[in-house]
Image (cartoon, rainbow, N blue to C red; front, side):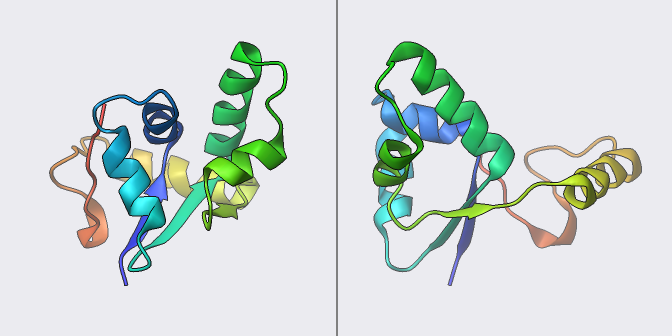
Length: 106
């Protein structure tokens, strides 16, 4: 089963009905996928949408992202990302470590 990690840009593309937004929505709604978003990206989305609409709440964002699992992002995760960035300074979207596939949508 494919595992998909959303970043804030992908979610915002979906919310704002950008061209790639339908692809993000399809990935979220597919029963073939397990979809995650980090707490950091969740915060970014909630902050931006909250600034544009005072009625935006965490509950409404949950409804926009049905079935998406919120993943914690604490000190340990921050250190892992920093280590990865230090050890792989030239990561590109086409070549990623551990066989991960990344797709830039916007």
